[in-house]
Amino acid sequence: MAGTARAAGSGSGAALKDATAVVGIGRTAFAKHLPGSEKALACRAVLAALDDAGISPAEVDALASYTMEETDEVEVAKAVGFGDLTFFSKVGFGGGGSCATVAHLAGAVATGQATVGVAWRSRKRGSGPRPWRNTAVQLPTPAQWTRPFGLLRPADEIAMLTRRYLHEYGATRDHLFNVALACRNRANQNPAAVMYERPLTRDMYMNSRWISEPLCLFDNCLETDGALACVVVSAERARDCRHRPVYVHAAAQGLPAQHHGMVNYWNDDPLTGPAWTAARHLWKHADLTPQDVDVAQIYDAFTSLVPLSLEGYGFCGRGEGGAFTEGGALEIGGRLPLNTSGGGLSEAYVHGFNLITEGVRQLRGTSTAQVPGAATCLVTAGEGVPTSALLLRN
Amino acid sequence: MLAPVVDDDGAPFWEYAARGELRVQACAGAGCGEPRFPPRPCCPHCHSFDSEWRATSGRGRIWSYVVPHPPLLPDYAAQAPYNVIVVELAEAPRIRLVGNLVAAPDAPLNSVPPEQIRIGARVQVVFTSGADGVRLPRWVLERP
Image (cartoon, rainbow over all chains, first blue to last red; front, side, top):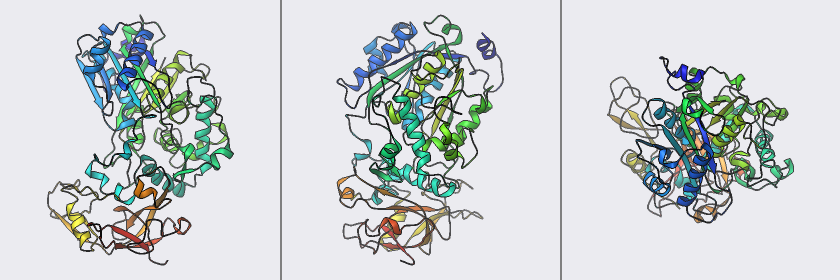
C-alpha cells in the first residue's frame, strides 16, 4: 500500500499522510428526544463503530473526544470493555474539535502510541439544556464584553459576523438559502436524517421566523439527541477490516494569531477565521488541492459558516463564498457537493461528528446521496472557533 | 439583565465606566503603546506587562449589528427584538466594542427601530445611570 510506504518516509507531514485509516463508523438514531442517557448513547455508538470495523472492544487502546463530551474515558472504557488505554485526548472549542479527534488518533497510531483508536461524540442537545441559557457558569472573558449587551447565543455571535460578511461582499440571503437547501435536499435522501421527510422551499426560508437577524430559523442547525463514533487504525491493519479503508490523507488544527473564538470581532481581519489557518497546514501536507476534492462535509452550525469555509479552504477567492453557492454548485452534480447526509442543518447536529462519518460513507460508496466515484473528501470542523479539518481518500 | 462577570484584566474598564469614562487598555512599554482589546496581562507585540488605560473620545462607527429574537433569557426576551451592535472606535478602528444602540442612556434595548441602524453610522458612547449597581456603556447616534 502506497500509504504505508509513504508513512515510513521522513519530512514534515509524511509521518501522517495515509498512515492511518478510518475503518469503522457507528451511530445511534437521531431525534429531538431519544430515551437513554448520553453515556448509554455513547456506548451504543462506540460498539456499533467497532462492530462495523470487525474489531473487538478489548483491542481498543486509544480514545479521543471533545472537552464538551460529558461521558469521560473511564466511563466509556469500563462500560464497553476496552483493553488497557495508552492514549486519550480531548479537544476543546465545541464543534471546532470534531476532526481533531480523528487527527489525534491518527497521530497516536502513526507514531506507535496506540494501535486501535476510537473517537466519539454523544449529546442530548435536542432534549437537554441549551448551553447559552446557563448564567451560573460562564467564562469571564470574553463574556463580560458580550453577554450583558444581549449577545447571548452562538447564533447572535455568528449573526454579527454574517451581517458584516453580507455588507462587505454583497452576499445575500439567497446565498445562505442555497446552503440550507443543499443540506435539506441531501437529508431528504437520507432516512436517518431528522429532516428526511421535510422538504424546504425558498418561500419557507424567506418567510421563516428570525432567530437573530440576519439569521433566520433555517440558517440554524438542528437541536438533536444522538451519538456517533469512528475507529482509526494503521493503514496496514486497515486492510484486514470489514470495509474498504478510508485513509486519513492529511489533518490539521487551526487557531489563528489573535483569534477570539466565536466573538472574533477584535482582530485585524475578523472575516478570515480559523479555516484559513487549518487550510494552509492541510494543503501543505497533502498531495491534493481544493480542485481535487470530489465531495465535502463543511461544518454547518449556521449557513454562513459555509461560504466562509469555502473561502478559507481555497475553493474560491475571498468574498466569493456566497457567489460560489449559485447554480446548484453545492448539489449532487455541482462543483462541490456538500453535506451529503444533510449536515448539521438537516441530518443531525452532534458537533459535526456526523460530517466525519458521512465522509467515510462517501469514500466507501455507501452514502444515501452518493457522489459517483468519490475518491476524496474534505471534512471540516466548526468555523469561527479554533477548528480542525480532515482530508480523507480511499 | 446579566451584569458583567469581571476578571482581573477587565476590572479597570468597568471601574472607569462607573465614572462615565470609556477607556481602553494600551501597552505602556517603551516605544510600543499599542492598544489592545479585550484586555490581557501583557502586550502581544512587545511582551511588556506595563499597561495604561487610555482615554477615548467615545466616538465610533457601527461595524455590524444583529437583532435577536426569542428564545432568549427572560430579561432580554422581554425587550426583543432589540439590537446589539459592534462599534469600532474612532481613535483605534481595530478596537471594537459590543454594545447597544439606544435612544437615551437608560432607554431599553429596543428603543431604536432596527430600520434606523446602518453599518458605518457614527455613534457616541453614553453610560447607564447604574441604578442596578453597574454602569454599562451604550451608544447613541451622533445624528439621530
